[in-house]
Length: 214
Ligand code: GTB
Image 1 (cartoon, rainbow, N blue to C red):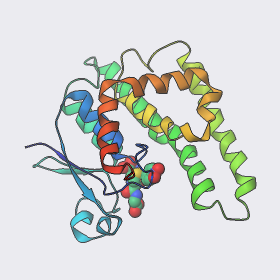
Image 2: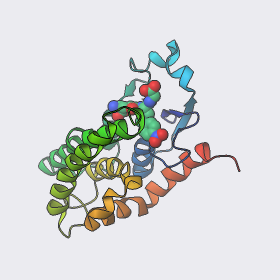
Image 3: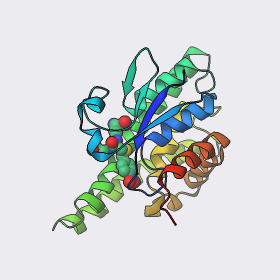
């Protein structure tokens, strides 16, 4: 039986692949594990059947018949540990790759989420115009650090890993702001991630659900 993940019945991004099911789809594609998707409406997210999977009423979740998971980081880590292809075998290299997953989620993603909050959810508040440049500067600190760490490397720590999958997924949220283009090596890093066949299959799968009807 294939694992089942949940995704938005219709993502507000209209198919840009920014909702967090895309990173889970990408991980499953990288390891070659077929999966099924249960699409959930915003209303159904908060109903008992879905709340039994996650107390937070969000996507993505993961079910494999034996157990269920929520939190995209935990799901991607489970996939990377359970199947081959996303974590090195050497234990130190493996821990470093997992460290990069945490860095993506705990160090790089928070200011990026603050920008979404400042621009979209609180964009009409009186403080929004003053706040946005401050949040952008906090993002730039991380982008500068990451860009100088990467230097000319293709990936964060040797071969592509779950750490890169998570970091690219997090950085993609910045694409529309134009901020990635201020750091050409990071823009190239993200493009390398997007060019991977597994990412393209994951993107196409979510697009098939979310593309606006023409
Ligand atoms: N920490 C959790 C994880 O990593 O899994 C966060 C999960 C989460 O934020 N899920 C969001 C959700 O279910 C979807 S991904 N929201 C509904 C709710 O909370 O009621 C966040 C997201 C949503 C929309 C866009 N977009 O339209 O661009 C991008 C990302």
